[in-house]
Amino acid sequence: MKANKIVGVGWNYRSHLGETHAQLPSEPIVFLKPTSAIIGDGDPIRIPAGAGRVDHEVELAVIMGRDARDVSADDALSHVSHIAVANDVTAREMQNKARDTGNPWALAKGMDTFAPISEPVPLDTVEDIQDLRLELKVNGVLRQKGRTSLMIFPVAELIAYISRFMTIEAGDIIFTGTPEGIGPLTPGDEVVAKIDGVGILRNTVV
Ligand code: MG
Image 1 (cartoon, rainbow, N blue to C red):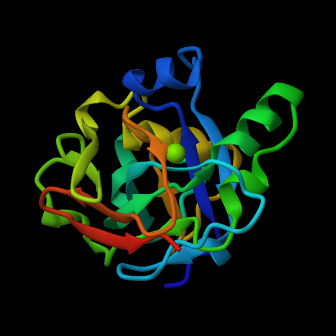
Image 2: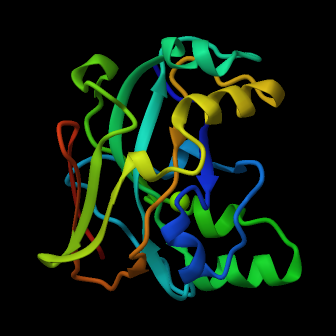
């Protein structure tokens, strides 16, 4: 099933709010990434000239098995078929400039190769989607770690909220937010993102 869209969620871990000078959101912060940004395990992350600082963001990706339109939180996970490890690669300076001027983040989040995703595994591979350990290393150094239990809005609530306004179609992917420890990437870096029991995502920056 091919994704028609990637729905991104911003600021979904308290620990990430401070480092980006963000307020605790009262509702999920939702944005889109284009499917043209998707790459897989082993593919290079390409930083285009003029992109400025580009950051890694390890995230749990959720892949829909069937359309979700105005579903309840109780029913939401029955619409999910697979999960994966994702990196919500972000051109941080461009995003901050957009935030400051009230403009969209589309380019900062949507450049080619800015949506690496690991091989998906069935949702029932894991016992509890809200109790998974995430980490990300750059050149072998631990930069990010967190647990999905620390999400501000759990996955089921994200799906219920988004689907009130926008149909999340079968195959669509949700990037559920990043914990603390975001940092810049430079050409030559080896980025390894991991979620215990879900998978591993290795990309080199060029
Ligand atoms: Mg993110």
